[in-house]
Amino acid sequence: MPERPLSELKKGEKAEIIGFDCRSLCICKRLCGLGLSQGKIIRKISEIKMGGPVILQVDRAQIAIGNGMAKKIIVRKISD
Image (cartoon, rainbow, N blue to C red; front, side, top):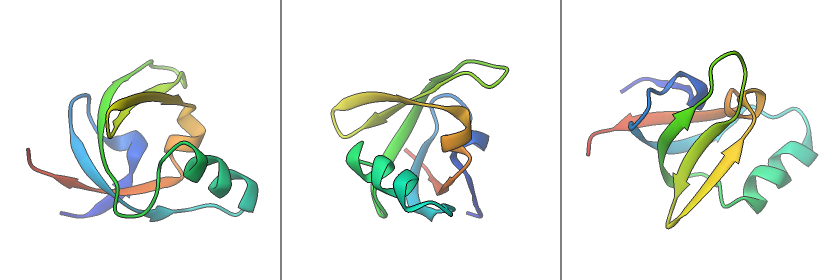
């Protein structure tokens, strides 16, 4: 499966985090602090159109991140 930004996943799709397209160390640290790291399996729960937050399932927690941050997370879709 091709790699793409997390923001391009559809609701309910599962993916593995491949890496981050961060130019700022601060953003990368923030993502890691939320439990998002390379190799982590995530599921996109929902998103609000027009640039609203994206809600993810990470392990047993749900987190919300901004659409801009979701564009910086590079994932590879995996089947259920």
